[in-house]
Length: 266
Image (cartoon, rainbow, N blue to C red; front, top):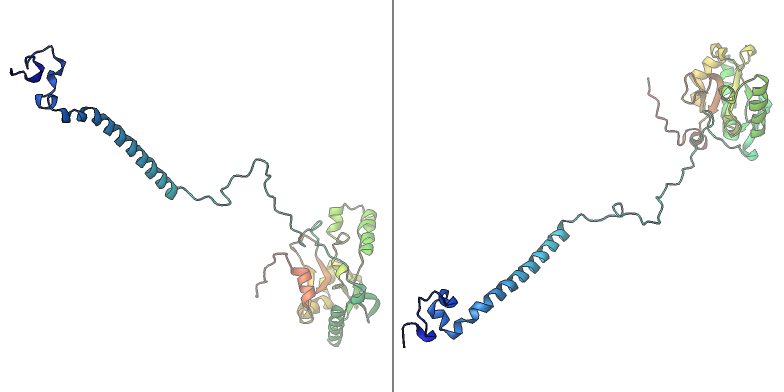
């Protein structure tokens, strides 16, 4: 046997392509699988690693992805945006005046001082107490107008407005549109001073004893002036127009849903 081993070729021959493989490996049959299994193991390891990486990435995305809520869900292609229904509240004014319904006939009674003027029972009772108390103080408070129907208000608003050549906006500064007068409620009353009737329904009524007495005492009987100077509704100053707010029904009727704040006590 020569030194070249089993191949029969010189060990250092430059023409044998197997010269780069060590003799111990070339001549050992059990060592040859290492040559063809090694790439397969690398391939298998790469596939396993790729799968593990994909699983880990998916898990991380699951725990970090933002949760979808009802607000974040896109609308279906055929769905229209939801529009809130319009609210039906008593702030639906016409030229600064709030809507009011007519008082029921069963609730209306005549005022003894003027049988042609009617008010709601609770308001009428307190009004007569107020008038009697003022009389004892030497002040004559007289009623001029109380309850008015929508039909009465139509005549007052449209017919008188046409006679005076007033636009609806101009007329509304002086008289409420039909369906929007406080007189419909049976709680409102126009008053005058019996000693100076020339001031009836005039702004100079505020110089009379009746007005001054009302300013000082009306709240004791549940009455207040509806349209003072620079009122939030933009209605002309009416020192003769007063309304009853002395029970729950009247208070809610005039104040509910208007966002008015409590008055500051001086």
